[in-house]
Image (cartoon, rainbow, N blue to C red):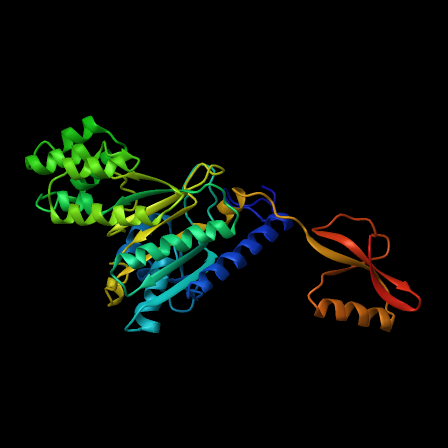
Length: 382
């Protein structure tokens, strides 16, 4: 095997794409900062028992593992940054009030999440800790949409669900983890015959509620139908009310509902959302409420947030124009060096032409040139 071949689902990022990703990273983190979110940078690896504690246990098969040569303990390469940010909120910041945190960095997946997905997503996210009200859910959803706006995503649409619906319906049922997993899988697949078979022994209200839930997906009429058909439980009423409030906040955006969407059911504790765009085949952003994420670290704080993969995002938007630049001749003359330094100090990109390479193509739009005119080095339009 050639030494330069990379592992499956791992790839280099070349200049054009790398430039676009970096510009998006800056724009999105600046958007989060405008909302008051503070940047944190968790480590790429840490002790395995920390990474896989609590909600992170679902990431076991996705986590690369290795032995620390210093301590002999097992380490893991993070597959998701959220558990790390929860640890930072719980133990390092330990604030009594609200904490708004954002992050951006690579995560590693032992297995690709989809047939053509990378195993090294560049994950960007934002999370708010310490507020249990719907205001936090609304804020992270608004921030996620503003991030897509900053990325120049056209016509985003939001799909809403709520983890509390199934949990409320099954609150009185005594189910094993295997039975529960089967029910969640049947709901996610909208497999009504399988769901009917799996729920045969449940109380009539719970069984009928799940069978009804499997058919509740579509536009706003879904919520009206859900209020009529689902069991009149407090958890169901609260979830439907929150979904209606979130949808009301989304003006001029297509909103759909899939009340049987069980993605991340072991992780989310309330409303959850996925944001789609015509240019992408899968959701560009996923997020919602996950109140128990910090419990394993000793602080069971309310939490809501979202994350996205910048690599997937850049594939869904049009390439950005090249940055304007100035070409300059290569020479060690003091006056020329001084002129170049002054231009760079002003934020200009100055590309010096090495001898014999005057007409090569690069990642900059050299629309001006630095020329000697009347004894002075002046910038002139090409």
